[in-house]
Image 1 (cartoon, rainbow, N blue to C red):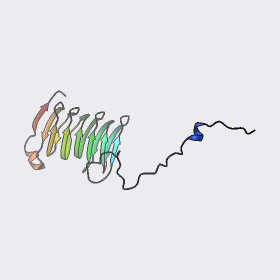
Image 2: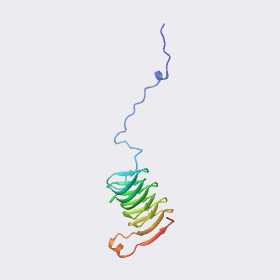
Image 3: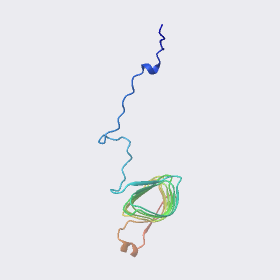
Image 4: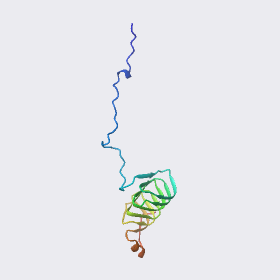
Length: 162
């Protein structure tokens, strides 16, 4: 008499389908948004990171942590995220403030305060956007000429409570 082994689920299961790696030219569905500046990469300072000192770089930067000092990104973009707390003078190509900034902001292109953004300090940029609900206390200078800015005072603008 032969002993028959009862069939188990693993005996009757179909072989696993072969999973191949995505091809190089296949579309990718979960890529993050590309950096806004044309050159360099992008870096993030996380929520738990605290930095005191000077930050400079040749790539876009997102800040979600706490920074105290000076930030100089030259021709690159800075985003202060909703969790970001910055106490520094800032120079960048474009600055988006969604968190809190205390210090002067100079941008070669644009400064934008979102509805959750808060800025105590002066803005110097050719383009400025303040969303409804943004908190701002300081002055705005949208004149690109340094000699013209030095010869006349910047206009004072206040929006909301700081």
